[in-house]
Amino acid sequence: MKTDYWKRLAGAARRAPNPPAEVPFGFETRVLAEWRAQRGAEESVPWARLLRGGLVCAGLIMLLSLAVNYQALREREPGSVAITDSVLRMTMLP
Amino acid sequence: MAACLERVRQRDEDAARSLVRELYPLVMKIVRSHLPRRTDEEDLAQTVFGKVFVHLEQYSGNVPFAHWVSRVAVNTCLNALRAEKCRPELRWSDLNEDAAEVMEKVVAAAKEPDPSEQLSARELAHKMLESLSPRDRLILTMLDLEERSVEEVRERTGWNASVIKVRAFRARRKLRKQFARMMELER
Image 1 (cartoon, rainbow over the protein chains, first blue to last red):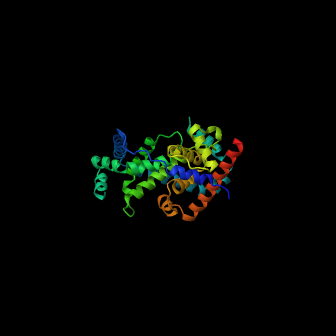
Image 2: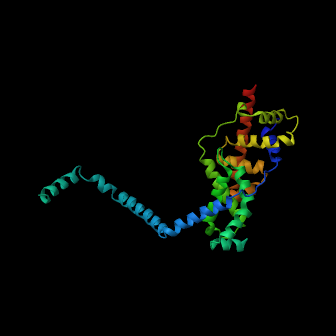
Image 3: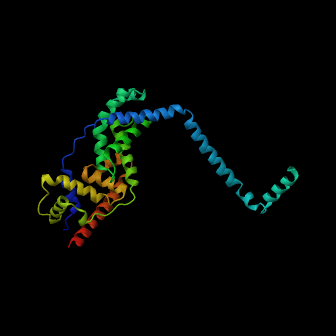
């Protein structure tokens, strides 16, 4: 039968003592500072979540309207925008 | 614990400090087991605590708080492991003297590595796991190095039990092949 080297190695690794897990100096302070900063950012822009949601909705609506009007946009005659633009320029500009 | 959590929710920093002290050994154990290369364990632990505090409102109390924190820690480590661009396979020439000695003992199968060599064995095991995908690495670390059951892995990761078993089987097979290739190249 073949020796399962991984099993043997894992067995030896399991018996290794665990290093101590003491909180290092200043660790809590760093964690709390990060927490405070995140809270500060949230409080300074109270509408941030709403704005983010609004942005996502606007993007979705834009994509949806593009999808709905895709056929119409494709069927438009080439250069029709340019012709309209030049007519407008001629009539409106001095 | 519930009272402490309530105080943290009300932004009591003393309570937050004692929560960090209480959870540090648990978080550090998970971080050390699933640490990507060239990543500082303290930095990753800090990221885990940052996520715990930010998402604390989402903790419903249905599971013990330690389990919830474990899952946050495991997911944070998994994301960090995913960010690793390459997963090189271990070669004999990569081993230092201690690791090579441990490997020879493992291969010889004559005797178990000495207690003094167990740390090298653990280091070597983690190096071999680095060649696996982040999910496979996480599963084998929990099953084979931490001796957790499939059910415990399922609880901590949220993955399906049969997926865990299949992944573990394939990952062990991959490691066996890796061992075989190392031996061939050494000869």
